[in-house]
Length: 90
Image 1: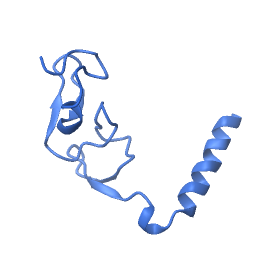
Image 2: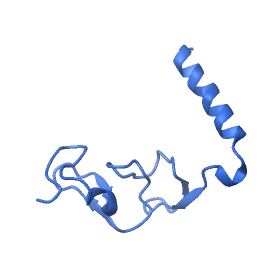
Image 3: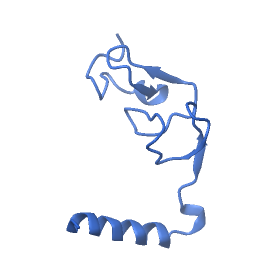
Image 4: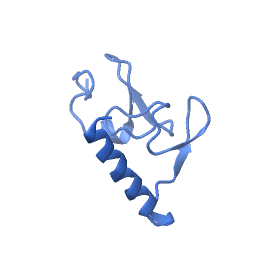
Protein backbone atom coordinates (compact mmCIF):
# COMPACT_ATOMS: atom_id res chain seq x y z
CA UNK A 1 0.00 0.00 0.00
CA UNK A 2 1.25 3.46 -0.86
CA UNK A 3 2.48 5.34 2.22
CA UNK A 4 0.77 8.61 1.24
CA UNK A 5 -2.54 6.75 0.82
CA UNK A 6 -2.10 5.18 4.24
CA UNK A 7 -1.39 8.57 5.85
CA UNK A 8 -4.45 10.06 4.17
CA UNK A 9 -6.59 7.17 5.38
CA UNK A 10 -5.34 7.55 8.97
CA UNK A 11 -5.88 11.33 8.90
CA UNK A 12 -9.43 10.97 7.56
CA UNK A 13 -10.26 8.23 10.05
CA UNK A 14 -9.20 10.31 13.04
CA UNK A 15 -10.63 13.55 11.67
CA UNK A 16 -14.11 12.22 10.96
CA UNK A 17 -14.31 9.91 13.95
CA UNK A 18 -13.18 12.62 16.38
CA UNK A 19 -15.66 15.26 15.18
CA UNK A 20 -18.72 15.91 17.32
CA UNK A 21 -21.98 14.94 15.64
CA UNK A 22 -23.00 18.55 15.02
CA UNK A 23 -19.78 19.17 13.03
CA UNK A 24 -19.92 16.04 10.88
CA UNK A 25 -20.98 16.42 7.25
CA UNK A 26 -24.70 15.98 6.77
CA UNK A 27 -27.00 15.12 3.91
CA UNK A 28 -27.22 18.07 1.59
CA UNK A 29 -30.33 17.22 -0.39
CA UNK A 30 -31.88 15.09 -3.08
CA UNK A 31 -30.12 14.33 -6.37
CA UNK A 32 -31.98 15.63 -9.42
CA UNK A 33 -30.87 12.68 -11.53
CA UNK A 34 -31.38 9.60 -9.31
CA UNK A 35 -33.70 11.10 -6.62
CA UNK A 36 -31.58 9.67 -3.77
CA UNK A 37 -30.58 11.61 -0.67
CA UNK A 38 -26.92 12.57 -1.09
CA UNK A 39 -24.05 13.93 0.98
CA UNK A 40 -21.92 16.97 0.22
CA UNK A 41 -19.12 14.70 -0.98
CA UNK A 42 -21.17 12.45 -3.30
CA UNK A 43 -19.22 11.40 -6.40
CA UNK A 44 -21.91 9.33 -8.13
CA UNK A 45 -24.30 12.18 -8.88
CA UNK A 46 -23.77 15.27 -11.08
CA UNK A 47 -21.62 17.92 -9.46
CA UNK A 48 -20.67 21.50 -10.25
CA UNK A 49 -17.51 21.85 -12.35
CA UNK A 50 -16.59 25.06 -10.50
CA UNK A 51 -17.00 24.01 -6.87
CA UNK A 52 -17.45 20.22 -6.86
CA UNK A 53 -20.70 20.56 -4.88
CA UNK A 54 -23.49 18.17 -5.86
CA UNK A 55 -26.23 19.74 -7.95
CA UNK A 56 -29.39 19.53 -5.87
CA UNK A 57 -31.26 22.56 -7.21
CA UNK A 58 -32.63 23.44 -10.61
CA UNK A 59 -30.58 26.66 -10.83
CA UNK A 60 -27.65 25.31 -12.82
CA UNK A 61 -26.00 25.91 -16.19
CA UNK A 62 -25.07 23.41 -18.84
CA UNK A 63 -22.07 24.66 -20.78
CA UNK A 64 -22.74 24.61 -24.55
CA UNK A 65 -19.08 23.87 -25.35
CA UNK A 66 -18.35 20.99 -22.94
CA UNK A 67 -21.91 19.95 -21.86
CA UNK A 68 -20.89 19.90 -18.18
CA UNK A 69 -23.01 21.34 -15.39
CA UNK A 70 -22.25 24.12 -12.97
CA UNK A 71 -24.24 25.80 -10.22
CA UNK A 72 -25.49 29.19 -11.34
CA UNK A 73 -24.19 30.88 -8.17
CA UNK A 74 -20.69 29.45 -8.73
CA UNK A 75 -20.49 30.04 -12.49
CA UNK A 76 -21.62 33.68 -12.16
CA UNK A 77 -18.34 34.47 -10.37
CA UNK A 78 -16.19 33.11 -13.22
CA UNK A 79 -15.13 34.49 -16.60
CA UNK A 80 -14.26 31.12 -18.16
CA UNK A 81 -15.41 27.56 -17.67
CA UNK A 82 -12.95 25.65 -15.44
CA UNK A 83 -13.42 22.53 -17.56
CA UNK A 84 -13.21 23.69 -21.20
CA UNK A 85 -12.01 27.31 -20.75
CA UNK A 86 -14.77 28.73 -22.96
CA UNK A 87 -16.29 32.09 -22.04
CA UNK A 88 -19.01 31.91 -19.39
CA UNK A 89 -20.65 35.17 -20.48
CA UNK A 90 -20.75 34.45 -24.18
